[in-house]
Image (cartoon, rainbow, N blue to C red; front, side, top):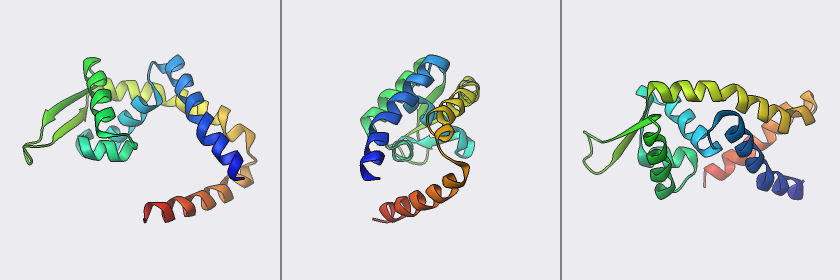
Length: 139
């Protein structure tokens, strides 16, 4: 199981990324960033919180937000509450891009994962992986 999990952790992100780039013109990291912003209050997050949510470094988050900003998908401004931090905000075109990419992402996940797993195993696997994730997040 461990070796299979490591193979998946290594290869699945690469496949999901190439599927998204080909179908929607977004990398998986860009899609994840847009998704987190779309779910945030007022569709905005402090850059540090966005980095934490996406699992990316602060510098990688800054570069990605800059790229998305140049494409008009997000804006970035200084925080009024905290003069030191910046806020990334999803724009209307960014929301439209995320929504248009969602079906392609879902199809990719289905093709790469769920089409190969028996439905009854999905629920049990979700429980097991959720328990492991919760234990790791508590540390």
